[in-house]
Image (cartoon, rainbow, N blue to C red; front, side, top):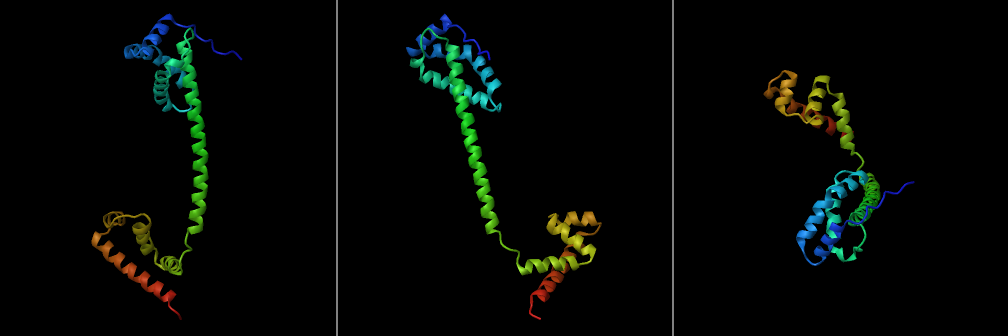
Amino acid sequence: MLEPATPPPDPADAELVRAARDGDSAAFAALLDRHLPHVRTFLALKAPVPQLVDELAHDTFVFAYRHLDEFAPGTSFRAWLRAIAWNLLRAEVQRFARERVQLERFAAWQLEEWSAAAPEPSAEAEHLLDCVGELPEPLRQLVALKYQEDRSGEEIATRLGRSAVWVRVSLFRVRQLLRDCVERKTSPA
């Protein structure tokens, strides 16, 4: 497998690095302007998600600025930046992988917790479902629109071609019927 060729050292880069090491921020800005497109392209080709490109390019230049004294004169500044970018990208991918594993473990644990804590349906809830099932179809439809589909009285009226007052009164009566039915089923015979 062919390795990408390391670009030869650029004399202009060497001079800019020397000036940046001596505290010339304009020299480092010039290095950034020269090499940012290359670093971004390198990262764009390697990063698993495009959102990482700008963040890692920024981190690459921050690291390079803080470690300018570690740059070996006579070597390619571009290759050094590419190595920094590659190492930062690898670290970020590893961090994502660790977080993903942790999230999967947490999700499995949370699901277990919720399953264990899920209450059994009460006898009243089961009786209520039975009572709703015993209602005539038009009233079951009214209950479904209100409590399953969470429709407003106005929406139900429009859908059923009735007035909002009819819906309000009918829901009141249905609730009374259901309450009476549940009470009958739960009271000792």
